[in-house]
Amino acid sequence: KLVKLPGRGLQYTLVDVPGFGLDGMSDKWKDNAIQLTDSYFGQRRSVNTVFMCIDVQAGVTPTDETYFEWMTNVHGVFWIVLTKCDLV
Image (cartoon, rainbow, N blue to C red; front, side):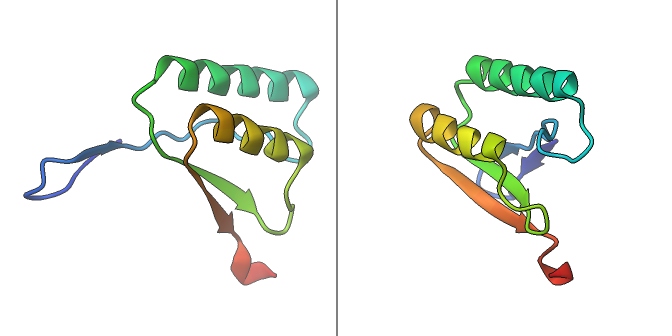
């Protein structure tokens, strides 16, 4: 989705990539989701900020921790957005 801010000429592209920390997800689906995400970020060098949503009820998974490290090394800037905080 392209978002244009009035009068500034700035454009943002919002991309919703597949989740990979969901309960019940098969290992094959999770591997494919991770591979797709890696490929996307590898090809899109213009990406300079990543927002990663974490369900506070599920907590941080080992896969999330791997991505935190990967994003720190590759992109440098990423933000963690906590979701479902109202349910805790």
